[in-house]
Length: 336
Image (cartoon, rainbow, N blue to C red; front, side, top):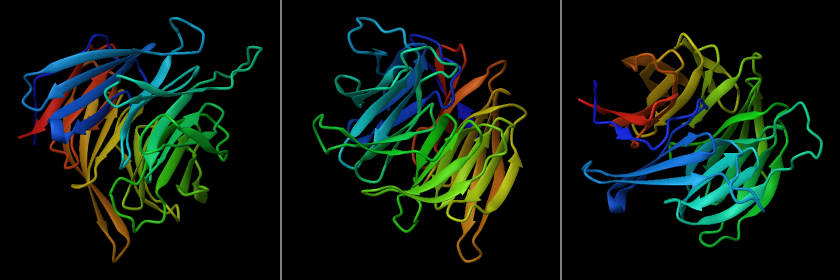
């Protein structure tokens, strides 16, 4: 069903972080941007669709009044809003927002770091755009910061702080089907496996809390009113977002899941884990009976590699890309 394409070389290897790959298609320019985090650097690669041209850029983690920051980056993710695309980088010191090509930093938000050292690490992790003008970023305290982003310029403001989680945020996702019919349009997940389901707006409204089972939910997606969650147990669970009803549970991997992704137009689901497997599934939703079904379609094994990022390169799931810990390349697969 899928075959391996030519890999994209990276300047540095990928760190072992959840969801350590982000992809942005720039259709008018026939380009795709990829970002992968290595320690305190974001590796960016811009590739032309014909595969002939590559350009590399590296972004350092930043902090005020320091020439070169050593603060570790936890995640880099593209946020596509209707009016603009931004690249958001979260680290131990704060949150940086760049134009999507990484050329200009438009916003910096410092995290509250305690004066005295504490037992708890401070960092930001979990990044998602939601509705027309918000970007949400999770923090190690369990808070979710909501930023209001104008259609252009750098007048980005912190508009709200959501304080429902008690443990560090792991991942955040918004409704990706493009449909406005679903009440819930944001889901946040934490280290304890707990998830909160939200409706965005002037004030974000908590619709539901899905309790965790004391096992980290490392990656989460929201598609057609269904929460897709990947766990440290190697399981994938599908919940109805607003009611929390469990539709399906799959023992998908032998080890910790690091990344989930969904191709919103085709219902293909990608899961990747420490067990070196990337698996492709198909989701089908029957609105009349309110049932969700998941079927296994395809496997790829990246031998001896702890996979830490996997993303579809387009909305149909025609191609996907994979990163692995200590691997200095992005491996690509395309439908046969």
